[in-house]
Length: 207
Image 1: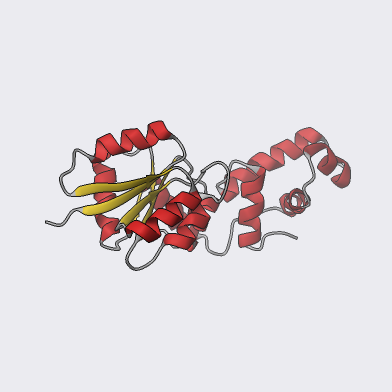
Image 2: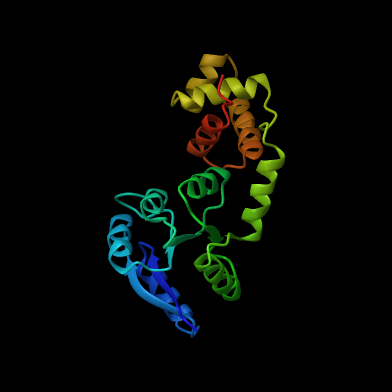
């Protein structure tokens, strides 16, 4: 049986060492290289031509995991995202960039092994929470139901305004702004201002 050739990409050496030890226990998985940055992963993928690249999303300086995925993903080399981030915006960006699968680092080793084997065959591999988010997005393709006020606040967020500035612009209190932001984050499935703006732009929710 031909082993699946893997390239690891994570900017934390300890994480790479842990993955190397973990994957070394599987006779049909062969780690052929390690990259500590997006640029390094792109260069090594072109040279080594692995079957699967295990790609973290946040890689510090330089290009991030999404851009690296966009440059690497091809019929011969599949990218399996392995990250701690599971917001709708992150998932969407990674999949649109060409990722074959999206796995969370909290998964059990057996799930990681199975996902690697699936990705090597070009089959989609998603962590259960990620699959649930994707299904929710598909069911709600028309977009989340935001109030007019929430859309107003999203518009101010997109302009880069802080809570105090938004409160002044809309003649409401900062506490009210924070309350609306919490509801917006929940509806969009994000936990940051940048994530909210990204999803809002993607779903054309901005006023």
